[in-house]
Image 1 (cartoon, rainbow, N blue to C red):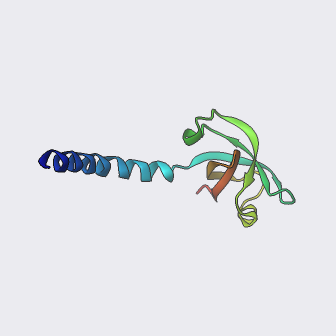
Image 2: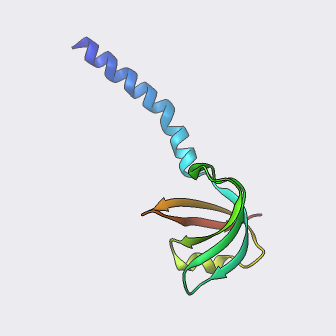
Image 3: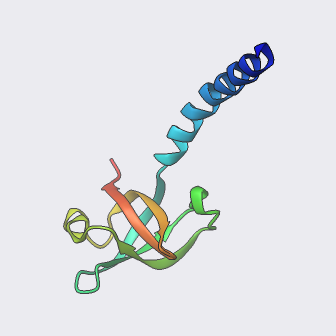
Length: 100
């Protein structure tokens, strides 16, 4: 019984070290520039640096946006910070904000 408690305590200790790192990674933003906005198809073209959470190198590509209202926050030429996730097999911008 003591061995079970020791194992459980060790697992909880490891989880407490990993959890803050996981929370930071979930909010990691990439940098890019808005090249084109297609409101009709709810997409935005971004020239971007590496997208670490997807293992994607720098490039220019079109992304779907999770919420069409996000497109009203940016315009062509804006420098942005954004988060892309793979939602249902499609790379989707889930957060975008103009860079300060």
